[in-house]
Length: 154
Image (tube, rainbow, N blue to C red):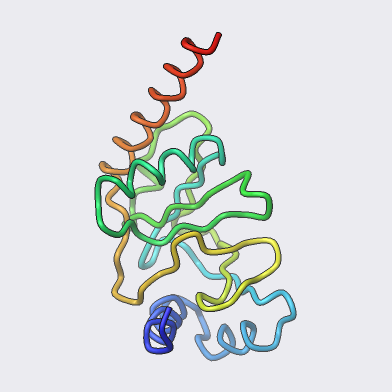
């Protein structure tokens, strides 16, 4: 990311913080390089298990130029896809957790590595999010491919 892209991403992310300055301060001075931000304002986050999230991201990367932001936890056992607000409350899916209004997510600074969570696709500052219907399509394709691989390998 360029310096201007990082600045735009920081501004976009901190725009939802109750105190944007405190959020920036946390990123700068907290040794872990993370801040808590509320979901449900500019985005919701759908949290997929890593074994589904990685192939889903691969499918998305083939379908569109740039998916919305995607976070991964340490060890990449879970991945968070940033989707339009309201998605979490309407989402029905086994094993998929939604973070919407009233929930907070751990977010690393978009231009730096942090312990525990990292950006697989950092925000670009433009507000790009992954369309929920497209994400669902990608999940179905990824799950179908995994099931097919299981039948062929078993």
